[in-house]
Image 1 (cartoon, rainbow, N blue to C red):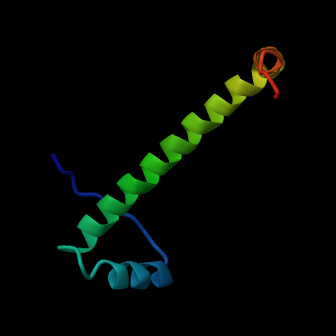
Image 2 (cartoon, rainbow, N blue to C red):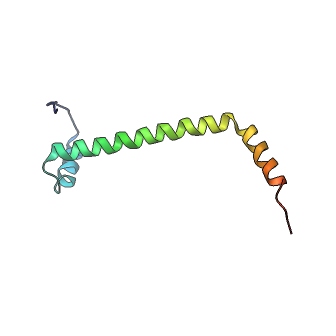
Image 3 (tube, rainbow, N blue to C red):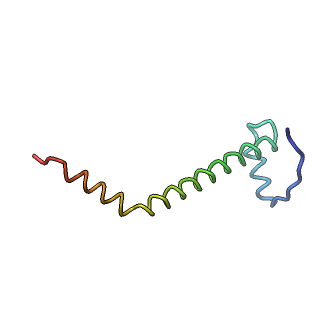
Length: 76
């Protein structure tokens, strides 16, 4: 279901949107698709940041495990 809304944008941004929206049905479709992509990218960024935080919390343990595994490597 779609709902009508009103937003205020700067004139230069609106001009850019109008130029970029040419291949789309209309300005609204372009804005909706662009916002969905931006939100998905933000969600990925937030997920990656959480993953990095978890990895950093366990960094010493992970490094020790990697060193242990490497110690079994046979060098000819």
